[in-house]
Amino acid sequence: MSPLPDYSPKQLSLGPLETEILNIVWEVGSVTVKDVHDRILSDPNRELAYTSVTTVLRRLTDKGWLACDKKAKAFYWRPLVTKQQAQMIKAHDQLHRFLAVGNPEVVAAFADSLDQTSLEKLQAIAQRIQAARQAREEK
Image (cartoon, rainbow, N blue to C red):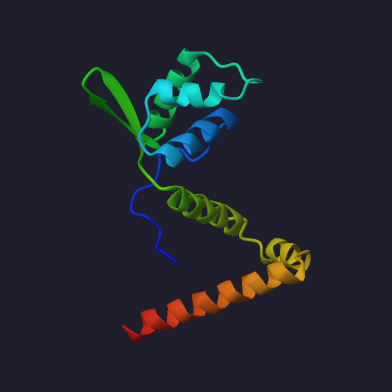
């Protein structure tokens, strides 16, 4: 498993359209507004203004998810983190929020409601945490 990336977007919360457009950028790599707009409109049941795509790309840039580069007369947006890094960053944030509850009874009640597969995953996580602690102590 890769370590948590050094860079994290300023704002992690994303709306449905922001998420959809970010997924397109991750898939393509570097996009123009037209690339994204065409991709969304390839679904005949969708309507979306070109200016809305521009607004969302700018918003994703402001939130720290994308960078914008000007090449010739066009603007190209590219992701600042990979999809896998984004999943790691979001999971890390959610875990910190969960642990911030600080009440062991709440955490224990949550653990009591988990199914066997989830409990096995938690056990694997606990083993990795223990191994990381031992590695730190050995340094």
